[in-house]
Length: 253
View 1 (cartoon, rainbow, N blue to C red):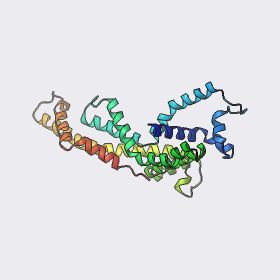
View 2 (view 1 turned 30 degrees about the vertical axis):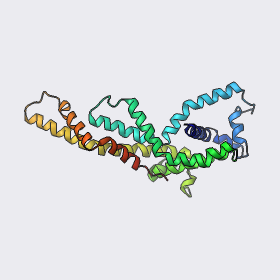
View 3 (view 1 turned 90 degrees about the horizontal axis):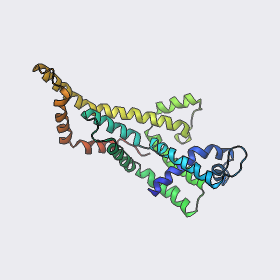
View 4 (view 1 turned 180 degrees about the vertical axis):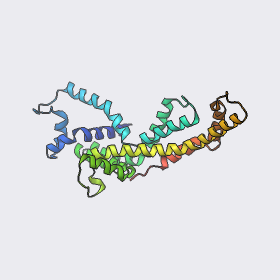
């Protein structure tokens, strides 16, 4: 958790204070001054205001971190799986979010390890500045996001932003990479969800056709098909298969 909080802090500083740091010319201590000063006159913030800013960041950072990791794809696929099984509140939302969160930590483990070794530990030892720590953390996360993002989505948002052609993937800024990454994750999640939905849809069609042939049109096919779908899911060890396939679908760059 200590490492995850450090990652969240580095990402938040990179996304929020990077413009001010760039205007300062990238000089040592520029990021610290950007965080501690008020825009315009450069007067230092009081301690109470600094605490207020940090508490405000804590409300935004979880969303930023979740949208920049594997969480989006995993939670969508699990939600589609629950819908395909015909279960409305089982597993409950808290369980699905917990599964998605811890599977995301498992998938992001190489990235977390890299950030810990190259950014957090050296910064904690005082061997690098916070600017260098933010830069190294951003590079590790950038590499992961690039590996999951489609070129068509990158081109779409680059054209919308009017950005010139990039020499290599490392030159793509987060302002373009982040929406492209989220769009790619949504598309991939729905593709996986479609493949998961198909066998359960076939069971629903077979049960509905059988009931209609027997003249039992007043009986809801969902009541009959749900036990068969649950039985199929248990027989194929569906949870292990789904979780393993989701983890294997990510490419750590």
